[in-house]
Image 1 (cartoon, rainbow, N blue to C red):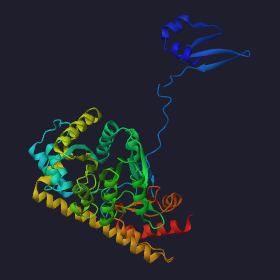
Image 2 (cartoon, rainbow, N blue to C red; image 1 turned 90 degrees about the horizontal axis):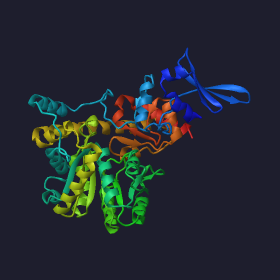
Image 3 (cartoon, helix red, strand yellow; image 1 turned 90 degrees about the vertical axis):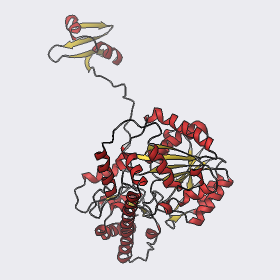
Image 4 (cartoon, helix red, strand yellow; image 1 turned 60 degrees about the vertical axis):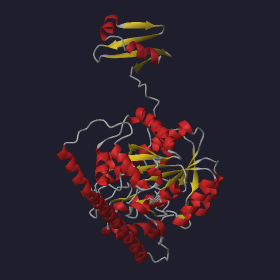
Length: 459
């Protein structure tokens, strides 16, 4: 019946007006001259019912997607009018006044680019050549054999997310059935990326809630138990969301088991230089694996360390056993990128290339990175001091200091995290992660009160 109504409703109004009524067996379609609305009359137990004709969308079967668990936090924060509200959900650096920060060196380079009259022409599929050279050398070191021997296939990507997505497509296409091992927990978008690329994944143990530290034995056991030739997704530094990194000695052992099992390491490096303040220290894990002669994948992002969140600038690097293999791999990365986004944006790539390629600007950047990393370290220390001073229960809060980077994993449960938001107006992800980059020294005591109340009084 509905389909008959819809098809007849598309007839011209003049035709309906002229005919007035069109017989459909026992049913009929009439036209209301006053309201210009066609309607159907059906006989049912001597009653006449009116059914208004409506346009049913072809997309009717598409359900509402759930809100993003991270970005949705910011929307809720904006709607809150409380004076002490804190947004510790999104990983974006803020000043002590809790305002967004554009690096001075970025402003300087953008001014130079404007004065030069840089054009907006398309980049090649693989991106800006000067950027690709700079980013690979920044990651591995300019004198690294993998660079000297041209064994790294690098293409510019749409920040970390886009770079991971291109790599996932490569895995799906050339390693069919291969599984990606992902830490439990991990960044909220990792699973989405591999699901979207139809790459199977499973989790390896990482976080130990009893110690609020690394479950190293569980991690090693799960990596050993994985099918040979699996991809192991590792956070190069400043693990998101826990802030817990393996020690240098543990990294050696992780490399041992990956090598023994013939696994392929896949690093996500989103915080180089932003975690410790040192570009070299934060790349140590990646360089360790490369020095062993392992083939590996590395996704990079410049959202955090250069504050280029909206520029979507990053790269995917694949270290191969030979220059010939790297050339072929790069050709396939380009082939994947072409129908996905054609070519990457130029603005952020030029910013990075100009800064890294100029010694004076490069030193300015390193100084600003150290400043940002230092502010987060100061906030981390002040939060720890406030928790220890206010909490009389004897609980050990030292894990706050043992974590690194912009995040801290508080160990709070979902219901305790809800209390943080509902009672204290502290917005955070429901896994207990807080972004210390969004916290000021002035707000540390308030946050400590909220954590202590939620931890001890909410079960």
